[in-house]
Amino acid sequence: MQAGLFREQGTAAELQQSLNRQNLQSSIVPVSEASANLPQTPSSGGSSGEVPKERIVVVIDPGHGGRDPGAIGIGGIRESDIVLSISQQVANLLEREGIQSILTRADDRGLELSTRVQMAQRANANYFVSIHANALNMSRPDVNGVETFYHRSGRELAQSIQNSIMQSVNMNNRGVKQANFYVLRNTSMPAALVEVGFVTGRDDAAKLRDANFQTTMAGAIARGIMQNVRSR
Image (tube, rainbow, N blue to C red; front, side):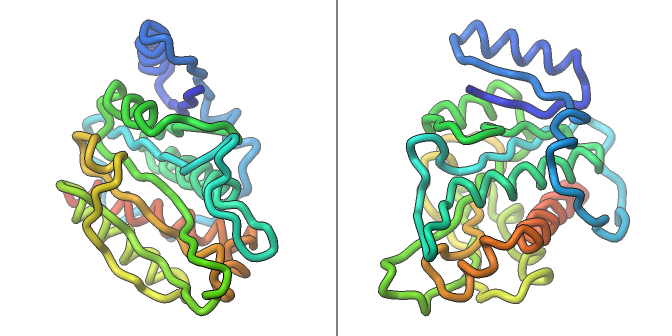
């Protein structure tokens, strides 16, 4: 299943037809409908600069889902649940700024990595941002922090997102790193993968399960993306 948030219904219909021809189940979720189920997020304090006039498309990819919950951390918190909540809010915030946002999944279901990449490629997305939560052995609750990865052309995007997060939350800065993750190396547009904290970390897990913190994190990621868009 692939789900998209669209402001332009004509464009949405074209993408859905394209996905259907590829035998990929798809659904188009109007922004107003999707926003109704999201927590209200505070304004980021106004726009600094203008979004480029050409259509900007950002694919937001909540990691894992369905039978694959990702990492399971302290108190049983599941990576797939945390990153879905954050991703939905990121997409909503970008839409408010005039950015067309596509969620690779809008609920708790699994997607192959190749399907996530195909969705970005077929949408001719300008950016791809995958959102995950980190984990180590439960015996290492002392390991906490945020890090953002890129493969090729996503370094500036990754740095912008990491900087924005560090300006917004009190967490350990694990930096920006190059990695060979499938969704990064197989996307042709600038791509970044954000690890929003450790579900196995004593400090991070307490934050990640908190709805207000998830909203703060989403705002930081959205601002980081917007800063990169405006710098084009």
